[in-house]
Image 1 (tube, rainbow, N blue to C red):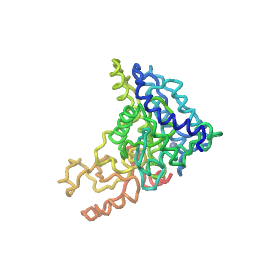
Image 2 (image 1 turned 90 degrees about the vertical axis):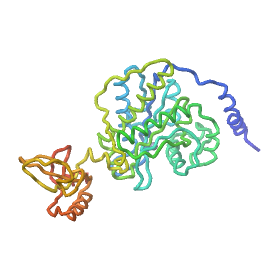
Image 3 (image 1 turned 90 degrees about the horizontal axis):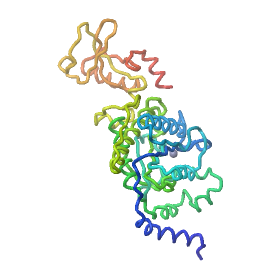
Image 4 (image 1 turned 30 degrees about the vertical axis):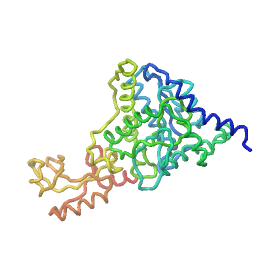
Length: 380
Ligand SMILES: [Zn+2]
């Protein structure tokens, strides 16, 4: 015999799409209020890395992103689900967005997986057939297990039961299209302006997205389990890059949505918000942007007193030769590596091309530093 609660729940699940199809999405006047949700917090550390916990990275990125948005659009009401290291229940996060009638809900998280996995992905609420997507949702939904009385609050929802997810995804998401559009803009910014690997826009049953009544996305900003990516995510500049990418996606999205309601949104010029012009081949390694923050190792191949033009003919056919000046001499280098061993293997190749005296040099923020110091910085 079915319990009353189950019958009631099934009734709601089966009839809800009928009702929603007759209730038009209310026309609002553009994007006025957004809620930024830094994942986890307090006793819920999220994914654990060797350098940091997910909760801290998510909070830093969220605060930076919110600051950029506020600077560019002072009239936008930017609300945070948390601004410090505190535990906030999943239902409360969604409630904050709903009660403030937010026009957009942005959740910031960090991924975990196998050591080799890296890149960013942005989720919208929806069903999934992918094991990996479901695992990501299960992991994030498991935060409720740290809440008191979660069984009551989430109507017996079990983060580890597939049935719970089937029921959850029966309810149609009125904001799916808009959520997807915003998610696509975020992924585009990540890959084209920050050089992150684009793992795509995905759908999965995330409880926190499910409970909100506005376009919403959950961003996995990178893998804490990938050594290079973790270093990027804990660094100030890495967080600036990620935050500014989301900010620029927001700017595009707001301008588009506002336009549909007859408003012309204008973003103020803002300071910071770094971006790169990424060549397509750069975006395939986790270290592609890491090279702009930590020390860089290069291989020095030649020195001259008069500057040579940087063309292959002058360097035994080598392309991408760079020059720096020191002690009145022009010094030519090849390669950009994030570790000494990577640079050493470039040196071996150069020796085979005839540069038998080639040696490894190191730079930090464009300034030459000793290889020993650079190696220490990499280790830290
Ligand atoms: Zn998370």
